[in-house]
Length: 127
Image (cartoon, rainbow, N blue to C red):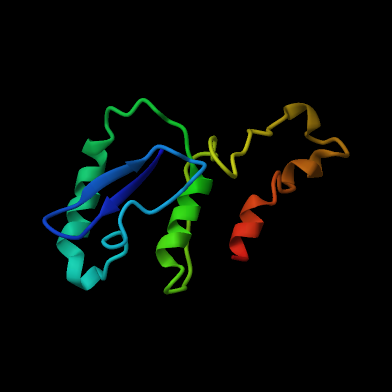
């Protein structure tokens, strides 16, 4: 699932996109706002995020679909997107598998663990 937070109006509103294969924006406005104009809503969202997700049992990470959604939100403006992830993307486009293998450490093919497992993120960077 990809979560969207609309910051227009009277406080933040969460919308969930369950389909990771066909990413679309649930509403055309409110997903990207001017910080100076919407500071109260941004602060309210940041304060409420921990309580909104404290009982979440679904721990999968859909980074690829989230990047696609972010691209759709910002494509008319351009700019730079910085992504910080605390876990491997495990579902949807761009999913990765844990490749740690202690048996390869110190062996001639150890360097292969440092190579990209997929070209997905490299291709997204050039969009």
